[in-house]
Image (cartoon, rainbow, N blue to C red; front, side, top):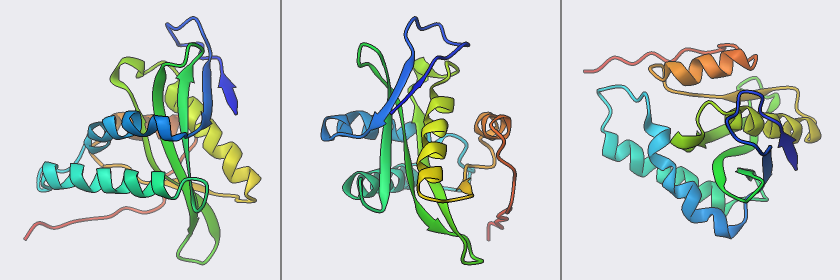
Length: 164
């Protein structure tokens, strides 16, 4: 689908983003712990990880329907990361695309994989006729927040929580 030559990469080959196939299931699920980085200390990490795994299984199950899952790999087929994207609706009723989960293996971090995955989501969203692409990430996940800001995402809502 998308080839992204990563200029910041230590890799010699470009990053290729393609649709998920069932052989990717184990890889996608193996990155679930990467999706609980930056959770607040008052949330149970085991419950958060279990919930993330449920989200991933749901995305895999609905792949090709209401959700798309894309996998990034290098030329030799080594998987580097994945992203899920789905149809959503803003509370105003405007349709938009929503990135549910994006994770890159620790070894591939900082090499353009996340950028290639977001580019694939932008392409998919544009093809669906959407003018907006949204996502959420943990407030303490400062690396992810910086990454998304660098790609042009802006803060729209802020959720506040009080521990009782």
